[in-house]
Image 1 (cartoon, rainbow, N blue to C red):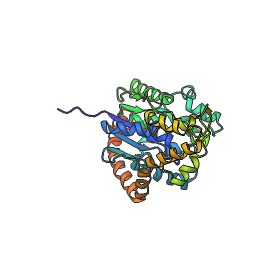
Image 2 (image 1 turned 90 degrees about the vertical axis):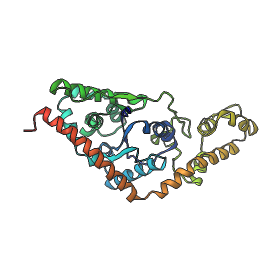
Image 3 (image 1 turned 180 degrees about the vertical axis):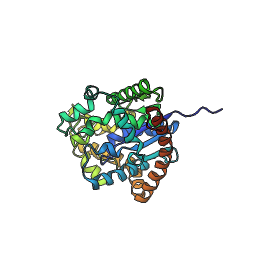
Image 4 (image 1 turned 120 degrees about the horizontal axis):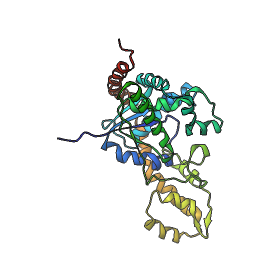
Length: 315
């Protein structure tokens, strides 16, 4: 008898253009593991409402993030790919969890405090964010949640919500475990800091050749002796150190040449993704999301029937 696969869920932020830091830091590790699980890929459009207020931008971002994931090689036949807003049970279960946890408990959320510190409006959605995330995870009896080392608290909050519900209404939810990649790449940006849209130091994942060349030429050439450290740090993502060592020795102090070679290597790597991305039209994205929503809805509605009976609203 074949062993059933464990369930894995990850949320895809519809937050705009992906960059190579996203790819090597999160997308590539996920791409290598998702087919080993019963995987759910959810576009977290309701989470995005905490910061995105323009409906046109949100619609475009939803289409783009799905297209991007398909372009890097995610197979919708091996994962349930859906929009959060297409499954109304997410917000219903979130409300139930919000009635179980305390305000002081939610006030301890690192993500909430960090965003408020950065000047983001402290709206109620941002404050209650962890309970919607808990609902996202627990609706599908998720066992594995891939997270970065700085996101473990999200899963801790989910386990707490599950425990609160189980204590109050009886055993209903299993507590999920986080999956952290020990070897996740921290990709440097063109200024040497961690690559991030907030720093404006990114190399777009689906950039055209000319844009790649332009961005790479702007990499800060902080160096030790004749060695351009920031250029080399990015180059290591595409070639082994054995390949790079003679190349950098041969072009010692010729930073322009080394940047040109890096740009060529990045373009060669990105080109298949870029062409695939262009070939995926909006109708294909909508078809993938519709089929995924039907599968997700069937699972979520069954779980909510159980929840409603437990809390006493089913007569």
